[in-house]
Image 1 (cartoon, rainbow, N blue to C red):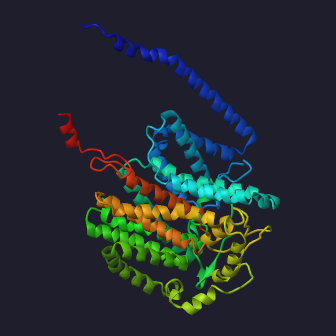
Image 2 (image 1 turned 90 degrees about the vertical axis):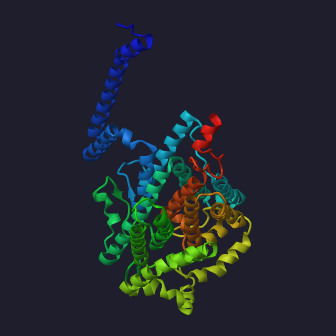
Image 3 (image 1 turned 90 degrees about the horizontal axis):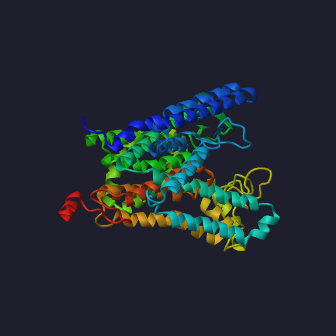
Amino acid sequence: MADVTTPQRERAHRPARDRGPRVLTTIAIAIVVTAVVVVAVLFLEPLIVGGVLLVVCGLYVFRRAVFNWTTMLFVLTAVILFIPIRRYALPIPVGFALEPYRVTIAALLVALGVHLFVRGRKDWKPVVWGWPIAIFLWTAFASLMVNAVAITETGLVTAGFANIFQLAFLLSTIVIFRQMLSSEAITTILLNVIVFGGAFIGISAFLERVTHRNIFLMLNQFLPLEILRDDAESLRAGGARAFGSAQHPIALAVLFCMIIPLAIYLMKFSPWPKFQFTRILVYSAAIGLMMIGLLSAVSRTGIVALGVMFLFILLVRPKLAGLLAVVGLPVVIVVGLIFPALFESTVLSLFDLQGLVASQTTSVGLAGQGRLADLPEAFAQFGQNPLAGTGLGSRIVVGPEANSQILDNQWLGSLLETGIIGVLGLIALLVWPIVVMVRFSFRRGVPEQRAMLVLAVTTSAIGYATSMFFYDAFAFMQTLLLLSLLLAIGAWAMTFQSESWGGVYGLAKPRARERALVRS
């Protein structure tokens, strides 16, 4: 019999040597779990403790399937799309509301930090938008420092720093999503999840409009969540406006506007359905459901955003705009015939310029005065502090400490709070990425699929930037988080290296055949 080599003997004896530490580890885990259970039963609510332990046990059993970047990518996306922000929290008493989106983002930031510490920058993927984010946050901080004395005297300095932290926390999702996007297949699946998730939210919004029951406010019946508030209601066009999974009907309409370009992209480039005609029908149906949801929100902001997005496509891709008009016009006509009252309130009312202007100049001096009525006083305030505004967080618009009008205009609100400096930061965050992505979309040598995906993300970003003129966008986090996700997808499309293309920001990888020739 042949002699057993030294490595083979080491492998044969390794389990025996490792058995002792493994047994000790198992005993330690058992002791810790037992102690936790005893303390929990004695001092905490048994039902909640039991549920938490079941979840923890399930996560441990399926840890390899759950605790990986791909799974977390879809978990975070689902939390953003389907769990309304400011409505739910985990039932854990820690002194503040543990909202699901905060917990998920914080956990992923910690995981990403640990991964970066262990692996270094070896697996780091280019984010592309690092400088725009940094400029935006630094300009906000600069406005705070210029007004440090004034806002300290009024006791609002804490609110200013809290706003900066909140914005940095939300924008960190651009980095998180970019690091979790690892392949073309995963990105395509993610796009489909977003589109069909938007379609589901759309039909749910319509049902909410009809039945006055929001299924997204029933999640506490199925998930371990406690509801924070469910008293929101807004009436228009003879009924209640739909909130869906958003914080406000306007934010819901903007959500649909941002998803629709992705559905149009998938009409051509999605691998499923296989046949193009079927694929067009499927994604047209998804767009139709989102349009119904948009009408159910009874928001003219969404229609204006869609109009600007179409004008952008008409400018840069006239043929594509013509095709979209041919495909979209029947959908618009059908939706208008089925829901005439909603269609008139959201679309046709935009053509009544006299009535539109009148509606935006009403209730002067009251909390709900029109957007146009806000302008004279707002520009007068801007003239007093044009460079750095009054300081980030200095405008309180709700509650007993309110000191300013609700402007429903993020651009104008930022101008008053952070001045010209802050608006330059906003331009760096929102306009500069649009410029970069437009240039990329027309760059020679870029595969059509990548160029069109970046163009779709660009169109969504333009819709978001436009809608900011009509609502306080940063106060409604779902759309800002979706923008972060889309910017991460745009960064992936511009930098992900494949066999045939290396990405605009990286060195192009040679084809396999070319590498073989080099080796030979």
